[in-house]
Length: 318
Image (tube, rainbow, N blue to C red; front, side, top):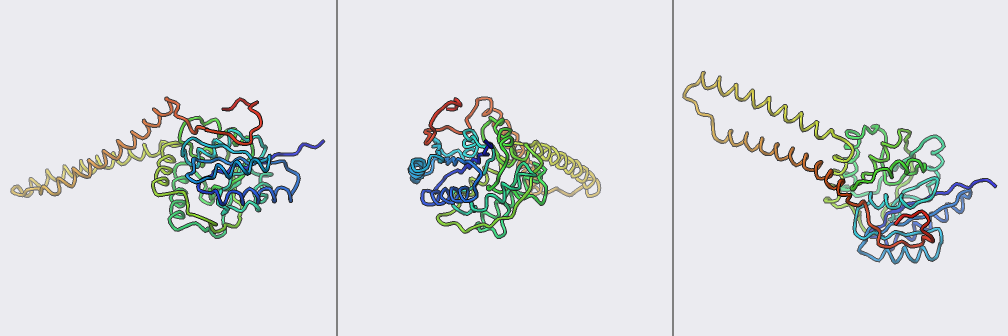
């Protein structure tokens, strides 16, 4: 009997009690129509304030392929994905959003491309995100290019498909604050994009506030690269050279114009600039030290309050 590959879908859920059901229905319909694959759908409730866990429970009761994880607090999208990765059993993994914007009916465009690549990201023809969300995506893209050596033409999206061994490599990261783009790109270099449509949001707004985007950027800066520290060293060197040259200028100016007085305002400006730079660099170093402290204390990536639809615990995961 020919082995049937299994697709595991991982969907972080937040403010989606009215939309996640439609996403699940579309996945089931698409896989059924295509044929040739077994599947499972893992829905991860990231402590959503609405009743999405009740929706997940009903979906799991109606379809044995649907499973749910209920996190004890809001850990963030990337930690929710890690939770789903921990419990999946498939050969192929597909991650997509819970709001219906990522077209599940085009999933096999990504999956078919896995014949030649390890990791395939969706690339949208016309993004339907808000201007604020698009700005955040651009900043994230620039950061990934600088810190993670991401190819300029590669677009990283939350809708992607990969082989199981990529997920196994990602799961080797056991520290808090996972950054999914960095984890995926360090696992393989055989990565590409496939163009798909992008739908308008059916309900609500993006869960990424300015605060969450800032935390995501900080996480990306400090999780997978020491380039920010090297940049801080470079800035410190440039500032020191500027101070040295300014000191020479003051001495020469004093000899040329003996009665002149250097203004206190310029002195204060220099002190404020240097003080601000020192505090900025100390904060950056402190962020690295803080993450080391959290890692040593084994701060969890996620904590699961309840599991739905998992029939057994043979794998020993709690």
